[in-house]
Length: 102
Image (cartoon, rainbow, N blue to C red; front, top):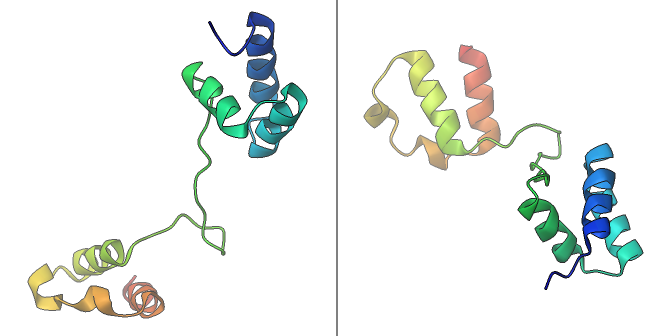
């Protein structure tokens, strides 16, 4: 037996599809008196849930230090072994270096 009626399922799919945001999930959970995780699970099983992607405080996609070092190595066309340990530098310094060589 399902926790959701066919009508409820159609309703949450329609509501979420119209506004695919976390606020919609919270509103649906409150309205249908279901846990937020239950609503997310149902939307995921129905194939409509869109996971929210993480953004930095600056609103950018997150980049790891290793990714920055790899890009620096590519731009300078050197072997990665020559810059071993560079990923331990502050991220701000790595970004500045990458910007300077771009």
